[in-house]
Length: 400
Image (cartoon, rainbow, N blue to C red; front, side):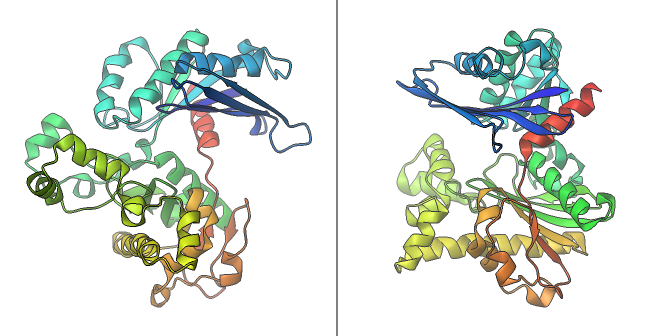
C-alpha cells in the first residue's frame, strides 16, 4: 500500500510518498514561495539511498493546486516516476486544529466541509491552507480516500479540569473556547517510540514529551494518554517559541492598546510574529543565538535563559500532574539537535532524579538515543519525530 502524505502550508507544500509494506520513503518534496514572483520545487526520489535522484525546479507557482500538480507529475509521470497515479491508495493530510468535533482521523466526505470550514477559526494561520490542500488533492485523485489527521486529536483525552479556561461558561458552550493543543501527531509518535525503545507498553508509561522547534509545545502523557499540553485554544500559548510569545498576562493586550494605541490585529501580529526569541534578542534561529552568546551578546543569553527556564517550569508542573515520570523526550528541530538547550533545560532538576550524561548529550545523530546517566531515575531521550510516517500509519489504519 502506498500513501501520499501532504502538509499544505500558507505558501508551501511538503509531501512524502511512503511504501507501507516496509515504511520506506519513496519520494519527499517541498514546494515553496507559492504565489510569489518565483517559486521552487525540490524533490528527492528514494532519499538517503544510493538510488537518490534530486530534482529542482524554479518557476512561478501561482496556486497550491498548481504546486501539487507539479509534484504529482514528478512522482507519477516524470522520467524518475516511481508509481502510477492509480497505485496511490490513500492520501493523508495534516490539519492543525480539529476542535471537539474532529477528535480522531477521518476520511473526507462531502457533507463534512461545513464543519471542517468552522475549524478554521481555531487556527486561522494553518487550517485554511491545510484544508485547501485536501480539496486540491481530492480533485487530482478522484475516488481515492483522503484522510485528515488532526494535530489536536491526541489531546482530546485531556480532562475538563485541564482543558477549561476560567471564563464565563457560555464562552465554552457557545464558542468552544478551551485548550486544544497542537503538535499532537508528533507527541503521540515519540511517546509510542519511547515506550517501544524502553520495552514497555505505552499504556504503562508516564512521559513528558517536548516538541521544540520554531514552534514549541509540551505534553504530559499519563498511561499512554495525553493528560495536559502547553498550547491552548491556539498554538500561541505555552512555551517561548521562535517568534511566538507563549504565555503572557492577558492584560498585556489592553495595556498595549491603551499605552501604545495598537488595535487587536496589530497586537495579535506582535504576539505571533515579533515576540518569542525574536522579540527578546532580534533572532529566532537558535544557531544564530548560540553564536551571539559566544560573542558576549547579553540579550541573546537572556533569550536562551528565558526559553529554557520556561520549559523547565513546565516540566515541574507536569511532574505534579503525572505523579511519576518514567521518561522525558526531546524532539523536533531544536529538541533533536541542540545539546545546549537540552542541558540547560534539565539543569537544576537533578534532585528530582533527572541527570543528563554530557557525553551522550553532545552526540549529534539522526537516531533515537538515551542521553541520561545510568543512575538517572528518569530516562531522558532524544527521539526524532516523524509526523509523515505517523500520518501514514493513521491513514492506513483508518481505511483498513
